[in-house]
Length: 234
Image (tube, rainbow, N blue to C red; front, side, top):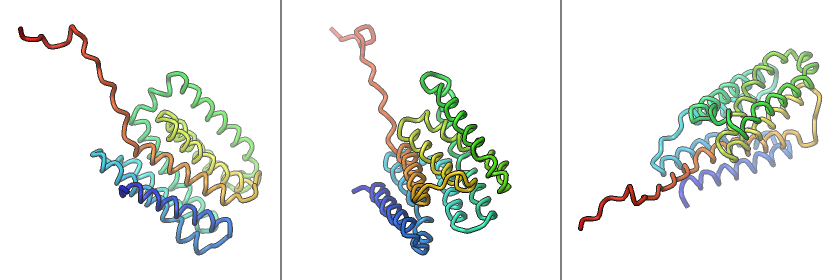
């Protein structure tokens, strides 16, 4: 089995243990597994792209590094740790936006059917912020969460321009952070929220990374027309 697949299998195993740790409220297992998730995805990306003879996208690696820092920060408690984690994940989203935009997302989103994606995410973000605003204001987080939400929505929007896998990954990442925000605002606290947050987060990041690690589609071969064919010597 290629190393890249072994690393991806290791990520899945560690993510499963982390979800079980969240479900059982096993603090030690959570502390051990959570910081390993994004480095395993980064290693998978590096191995997969190197094996294809491609350059590993540095902006994606930077996003995963910042996400690792955010994961560690959010293991802490208190507003300071939460804001630190938010700042690190903000940097991760900006790296993703830069990576997706560099590879043609802006142009693709100006054409149908993707033209509807920015509008849909914009409306979702505005509705979510309006719903959570009183709770976020009481917590003193309305302004930083608003800025973060705009970057998060932009990340999910630009991800949609890179195929269903990366687009779904961006949507799941957004869903994970939305669950965190609703808990902070005190407007929604579904059963098993920590498990849902980690499941959507891990799946979202994995889909983004595996989508970017997949080999690019082969360019269609142009048929040689009789006019373009070389002359046959007589």
